Structures are given as structure tokens and as C-alpha cells.
Picture 1 (tube, rainbow, N blue to C red):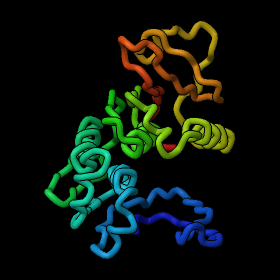
Picture 2 (cartoon, one colour; picture 1 turned 180 degrees about the vertical axis):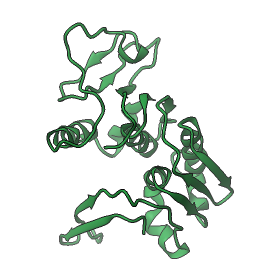
Picture 3 (cartoon, helix red, strand yellow; picture 1 turned 180 degrees about the horizontal axis):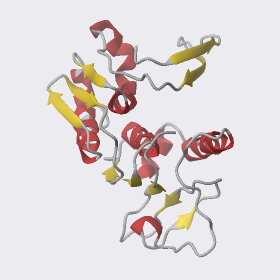
Picture 4 (cartoon, helix red, strand yellow; picture 1 turned 60 degrees about the horizontal axis):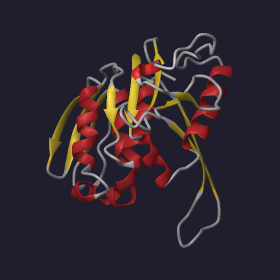
Amino acid sequence: DEGVAVDVQEGPEDAGEPYGDITVYGSDSLHGTSLLPEEIPNLIDEIPILAVAGALGRGDFIVRNARELRVKETDRIATTAANLRLMGVDVEEFDDGMVVHGGTPLKGTELSSYGDHRIAMSFLVAGLSAQGETVVTDAECINTSYPGFERDLAQFLEKTKDSGRSSPRPWNNAGRRKEACGIPGNIMLPVPPPLLWRGTNPASRENSICWENPGTGGV
């Protein structure tokens, strides 16, 4: 519904739920959509990342009848809207949902995961299409559901680089300061560029991840 092509390779059911491999093909025609009430129950956990996609498209991404989002690990309506606004997106918030007005270029900034793994992952992905530095704090919560997220994201970015599509800048290790991304005492994760950083200083932004994209956005 947002103007992209999707290829689904279905596998057998596991514990009563279908699963498989999904390939999404990017498109310059990404546009907003309105989620139908009957779609909400099966999409409730994906709404934060769909809202990010809506911000990157043209037009409005509309979510209503999703009051359950208020009582997840965080109030995901409030936290999604707050982080999108910090990235420069116009968002209207309602008791049962939101309207994301897409089409405004995202700007890098410091964002909180609020200790919610889905918020952390969604806004790390948003940072890939933002201009400038993006920092997501308290990113360790991702391990709640996806312990290999950083590794898999790095592998995706490496494939993106190899394909010639734009991606965040691959930093050269030589002379890179430990204070990278403004987090004292950072260490570099053993992943291919672009480099992901995790803070290790409890007095600073512990367990944060950040990178810089100096371009105009887009992966």
C-alpha cells in the first residue's frame, strides 16, 4: 500500500504462526497510506517502523484504532511521535493513533529508545536515511528480541555499499577518536563500515549506537 514491491517466500507454520522470507524492493514512489482497522491486530508491533517508512514517503501515513500501542513496553504512539518530531517530521498524535506527514527530509539527532527494542530498531533504521549524525541511546534493549540486529544491519549496509547505492559514510579507522559521536569511551564494534559504536562509559550515554550520514539521505 506504500508503493513498494514485496516478494514473499512462505515457509511452513511454526507454533501456529506463518513465517518465511520477505524481500522489499525500494522505490522512489514511496507514499503514505491508511491502515485499515482489520489490519491493526496483525501489525501492532510493526507500526513504529511503518511510521518511519511513512515519514520517508510522500503524503500521509495514518494509523487509528491502535490504542493498544499505548500499553506496550512503552507508549509507542508517544515515543514514535516524539522521535519522529526530533528528526523534523510533522506528526499529529491521537488517543488511538497518529498521522505522519511524510516528505520532509529526516535530520540526524540524538534519540532515546525509551528502553523499547522496537523503538530502538525503528529509529536506527530511520537514521540510515537521515542527514547528519544519528544517535540512539540505550540500544542494548534490542537484545530482547533480536540479538543479532547490529550484525545483520551491518551486513545489509555492506551489501548496499557493494551495490553502489548510497549509504552512511564508511569511516576510516585511522585516527578515529574514541570520542566519536560525542560518546566518551566508545569502542568500535567488529562490523564492516559504516561503523556502529556502543558507549561503554556508565557516566555517559551507555549502550548507545550512532553513525553519521553526511549525504542527503537514502539507502
